[in-house]
Amino acid sequence: MDPQLNRDFMGYCGPYWISNYNYLALQSAMAKDQAAFNRRASAALTAAVLVTGIINGDGTADLDPLLDVQDMPAQPEPGPYTLTLYDAQGNVIASVPFATADPTDGAAPPSFAFEVDLSPDQQAALASATITTPTGDLAARAASRSLNATPREPVAVAWKGGAHLGWDHGIHPEVMVRDLATGDIIATARGGEVDLDTTAGELELIMLDGVRTQVRRVKVTP
Image 1 (cartoon, rainbow, N blue to C red):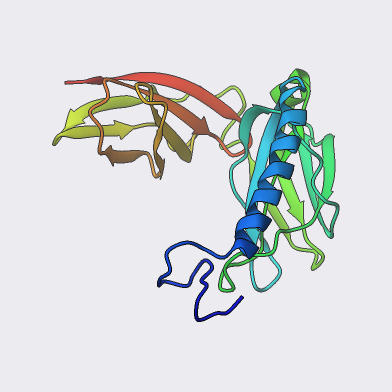
Image 2: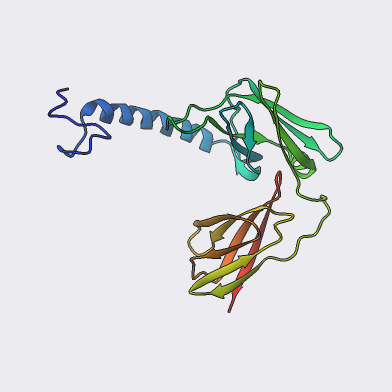
């Protein structure tokens, strides 16, 4: 393809369509992805935890709070890192070796995102998680307080054309907020309070305590 006459993505100029090189490659990739999606869609949904984080330049790991999901989990590609899940007594629930994904941006650190299939009993017993790296570093997440702790009720109040949300961040350090009317995630917040740009009358809170998830609904009061 003559680069003076044909442009692919990131060309930033005309002609406005891309050459058939990437077009056909994308078409082929999408067909393969659709076939894989169809195979996964025919499987039964199971309970799982979503594990995400990054590997820093010094080899240490940052582990995000785990998120409960319903999905068809696939085993991550084995690699030099290991996720270990524990119950409150320190017994191992699961141990999963995994590899990181190459960053799409040269300035970004390597990341990981995968799901671990758990039985209902394992999910209920989950109390902490660690990531072990080849350097011997240990990144950890644990339930923020006792498994039996009762958080304060979250409160949402109409405020300045939107809503002000407050919750017990000692138990749930991170919260994802969903607009029930649209189904959209409108915020991910930490620190126990956040101002939301929304006119929704009711919100769904996906509340993360570090290793487990609690879903609550809260009405926005005048």
